[in-house]
Amino acid sequence: MNRFKRNVTTLGEFIIERQADFPWAKGELSRLLLDIAIAAKIVNREVNKAGLADILGGAENVNVQGEDQMKLDVFANEQFIAALNSTGECCAIASEENEDMLEFAGPVATQGKYVVAFDPLDGSSNIDVNVSIGTIFSIYRKRSIGNATLEDFLQPGTEQVAAGYVIYGSSTMLVYTTGHGVNGFTLDPSIGEFCLSHPDMKIPKTGGIYSLNQGNYNAFPQGVKEYIKYCQDKDKATNRPYSLRYIGSLVADFHRNMIKGGIFIYPPTEKSPNGKLRLLYECNPLAMIIEQAGGKATTGTQRIVEVKPTSLHQRVPLFIGSEDMVNQAEQMMLEFNSEKSSVTE
Image (tube, rainbow, N blue to C red; front, top):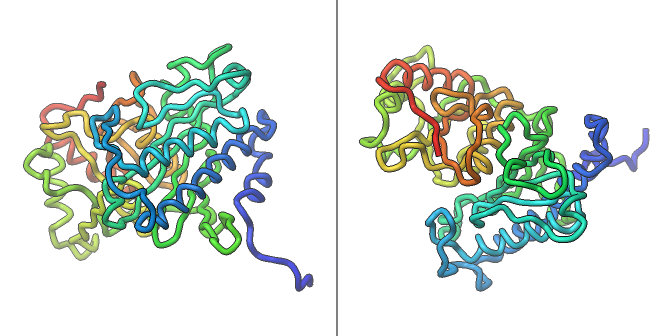
């Protein structure tokens, strides 16, 4: 027995070990994932000292979504763009903070094999109140010849080669999948490395938590209202009533439900008939992760990753989490809504 053998696997070691899962790749995807990890470490550093540095508060700008940008939004966006442009594996990006795709200059414009869509700082409205926030990313192989085009991003979620998220909370975790299961890594600040802490993550088939902004109840479709009533009813066989838990940071709500079992819902409303969450860099990556973990993600009527994107910032409704809970919500959407939800721009 080797008494000097350590039982810690770093993200870099894990990625290298898994390169055999991609016989068509030559290490580019591995380097791209490590670039994302480096940017996450830098953002984590700023998040942890946000109360001490001039990083809190608004940036006095409005992003393409019509939302007020926070200073940390801008910082995170810049860091991920810089990291993705550093090694030449990524030729173009699409970000929540940018109206159009951004193509990198130089030889990488034609030689880079991947495009990345990301939300650099999900839940940023919670920065000033010290609530968990996160980063969500989605990676596609470039399909076009020569320079990247918009069509490289408008691929359905079934074409993702990797997806993941980072949650900046009581500890910082990076969770990702390349289509071969889901693995979680916790940042060890003492060595500055993400270390494997949650191998082969699986979401429970059912759970006891439902997550949605119930303040919008009156604007919800009837099917969602009926599902909320179902969650609140007493039933010993299904351990109801369920607990309502809603943080308001998608990554934080999603991560909790991944661990404990539950459902997150952002349905269509009167104000946002197509939902509020973005398909390319919020719904698709989390859908890939949840499916790899044994869960389910739909619009209420359609599998999320099968929706054909039509624009970079397209919005869709989202029902995501434990399979049995999503199935129940879908059934009620079908039963109680006179018209099926449509997914458009």
